[in-house]
Image 1 (cartoon, rainbow, N blue to C red):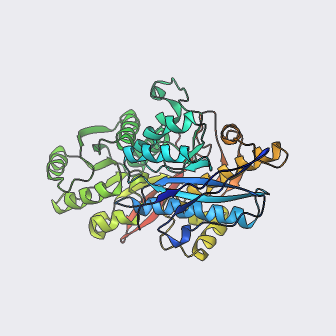
Image 2 (image 1 turned 30 degrees about the vertical axis):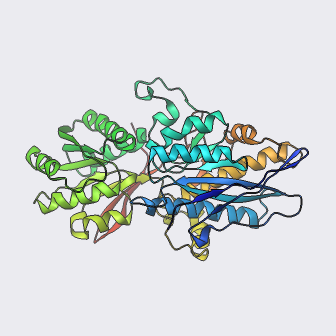
Image 3 (image 1 turned 135 degrees about the horizontal axis):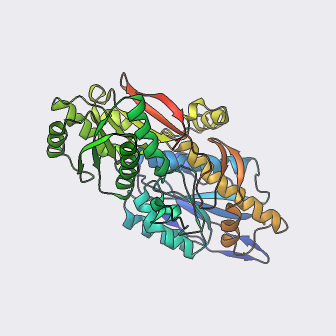
Length: 414
């Protein structure tokens, strides 16, 4: 796969309606421009921001492909009469700086009517204000840090929505961390934890919510350390874990770091489980750790397993038929639903405007998003007053015989 470049095409003004065309150059044959606009029809773009290259590309490409599938479906069924959707996918390389540049580029392209992404909460922090000032709606299928929707003081009970343009279909770490803590303490009967995070927004926040619930239940934190994302040698952390007497490790971060960490920990003779969040839940974790070292480790992830949902049957079949060379991965269903939420908002705006989009539709689409409600791939899709998903389900997965297997699905009861 290669990085995306955005090609902005001349804007065509049509009295009382938006008539725009744009396309992105794509590295994936499954992400070619979808559909063709009939004469006089309106063509708009749904942007995608995700890590399309680098260590997290397995997740990012699943996001891109699933949005592409949603767009193809909407065009083929004429979901919004008179409107054709296209995709423009940009690679943020999991970098907040690159994400900020991508947000600026997407805002500058007046064809873009909404954006799906990003994957990483830290990248989202760098993008939110840019989108908000342009009234460009953003729907993330994967961000889980609570502060993105509820403000920096959410943990003290003072919740305030920072940006009205930001929504997400994934549940938050305010639920995911405590859910994992209850599983470790009550189901696995683990009472002594060593905490590790990667010093990034997602990892630090996830560990904090886990710690709060675990200690509330009566568990003990016997040690804590911070690693640098992308490092190769975790020997000092491994030594600290071994010396702490912990009966498990809780890790905040993604699989490029947690995979090598658990591998080095087991190689050092400490065969305790490592538990993490949705950033760990990918087959790449097992390949990085090695099946033997990964066996017995756990990860929580948002929602119920897509493969078990009747609502996802058509998505899975269509994705396979679409010929995408990469799997839809952990966030595929949520990415499809994020794109479809934008499509539903566009449909509502057009219906309220005599069947056409207004000349400057972004603010109307942003407003309409708050009332979007539909049956999606992942179940019922709608948003609360903060822009958070109303679907609060989570799943615990465990590595068994070299593969992830579902252990438990439910919601946090706290």
